[in-house]
Amino acid sequence: MARIGGVLMLSLLLCACGPAEPPPEAPLRSVRTVQIQAPSETRSRTFSGLSESAQVSRLSFKVTGTITRLPVKVGSQLGEGDLVAELDPSLYELQAQQAQAALVQARAAERNAQANYERVKGLYENSNASRNDLDAARAAAESAAAAVNAGQKSLELARLNVSYTQLRASADCTVADVTAELNENIAAGTPVALVNCGRAINVSVAVPEGVIGAIGVGSEASIVFSAFPEQRYSARVVEAGVASVANAATFPVTVEVVEAGPDLRSGLAAEVTFAFDISAAGIQTIPLAAVLRKGAQSFVYVAQSAAEGEAVVEQRQVELGDLTDRGVQVRSGLSPGDRVIVAGVSAIRPEQRVLLNPDA
Image 1 (cartoon, rainbow, N blue to C red):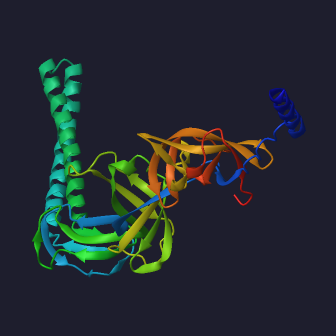
Image 2 (cartoon, rainbow, N blue to C red):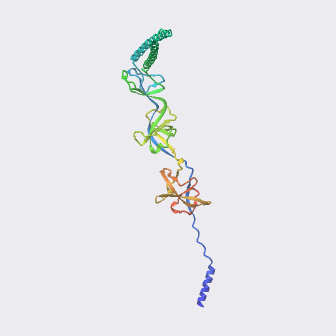
Image 3 (spheres, rainbow, N blue to C red):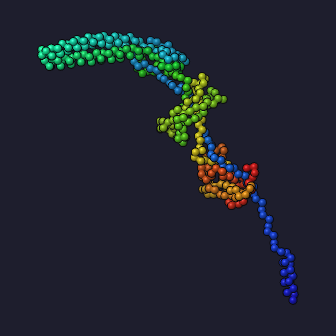
């Protein structure tokens, strides 16, 4: 009886208690995210170089002679046609006179040979001269005509040599250097003066192989000259090397200042900056704190919207790129619109429900 009574008492107690209530649900953890935008990041590289005139000419004579006039000095302003230097023309004038005399003699011989040919031709037509006489007379006339033509060319060449004794500027230029002296006997092709023509200013730089592929003719750049550190000039690439120079791992690139002021001149130290658009490669940049590593793999947590203000954590493997001042580059694994969790990463797990921070 005592046992039966105990069982009844236990049953009454169980009925009085009813079903047990579930434990309260833990609050959702709040996370902060950044949304991936369409990539538009640019990266810049700066290289040192020296300014130079876009048109640099080393003026020299085409003939040999002694310099009798040298009116220019360093810094002289030259207009088109202005005299730079002059050689003694006496020898070339005599050669021109000789060529003139030879031409007069050749023309006289041509007239004589032509008259003889006409005379022999008439005799041949009357059967008073042989065929050989006619051929010889015609050959002599043609030879005399060729001698006249050669004499004319010799006279033209001699007159050209006379004109070559004067060295003149072909455009508006500034004399940068004078390398010859008055009364100096110089050979043809020896530089007499170095001139900068026009106002266009170029800057040449050496670009490494890792960058040259992103630079082409027409690419934009900016230049800061050490003499004018507070002013930045716009520039564009006018020459981009396709081969390295002197077996170096650099390629020559020349940029032209778009609007060169009168203060710019050759020989100024310059810093040329190129901005490279890397958006075409689909590269994204995220904070380094958002990246977790598991062995050799890198991944991030992406918040997939589940309800208003809530999301489900998704683990996404990514391929990392370079570390920049804005964060770490992600080459693949993310798309525009993805919300990457950047705060609270260490305390969450995949498939976990989280609360999106409204300030994110």
